[in-house]
Image 1: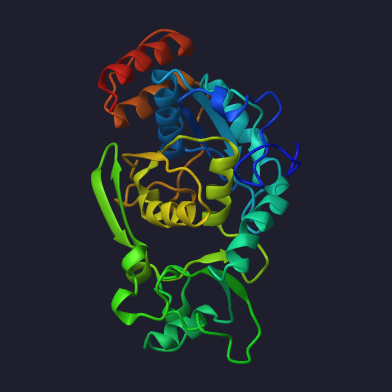
Image 2: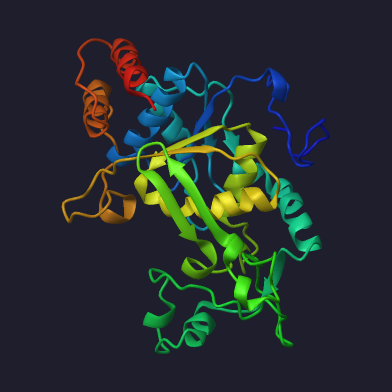
Length: 328
């Protein structure tokens, strides 16, 4: 797979995959499903996959699969093949060869470079414990727990104060860094979700300057996904409601990189027995695809679609019709 060879594009790291057409000849709709190969698909991830596939087919667009394997500490060898086999068993086939994030590290560095050059991204020396202390939280394990959301207070925005850089962050208040009255004004992101309606988040006050490249050298999810969406010409993101909290950060980063705005649709979640989102960390079982029609019917019900009989192909065709009739 090519990484970042030259191509006439407004974005220097943009590289079309083999067989892609120039941007002005592309379909009006390009969607994607982007699983992380940390384990096999479960009932919740099939809902997201089915929704994104149906939305692409209802719009007569392309549906792509991206393997988000950038975080080598969490990914399991060979799990990408398992996921692709699960999707195939359910009749969900990518219209192009899957993109692998692990093969695109040069692209993410090229995306980061202009942000660094303009001062929009800055080095940060803070650990999670440092941030917790700066926020006035009690020192100790709980204060730096990975499960706890810490709003970065901008400690290193004006310099490292002699400390060594650990990570790179996006300055969410770049347009008015020296004007306290304007601080955070341009970080207010408003968008309309196709399912949830109008949304609003002040990224500066609700998230803080977020990480683009981690202390371990791994590029952060937000930078990778925004770069990849642009590279693949994605127009619509259909995913679970647990990811809606990422949307404002991604829109802010799209603006900083002068990339096109996308449309978003966040779908209902499948919940575990404890009432929390079904996930690998929450005891989700791998899909039993000895009966793919049953698994697809279960996913369709979550999406408000009627159960279907027949072959997998016939079921999918029926749901495309239902989706097209109710699409927004």
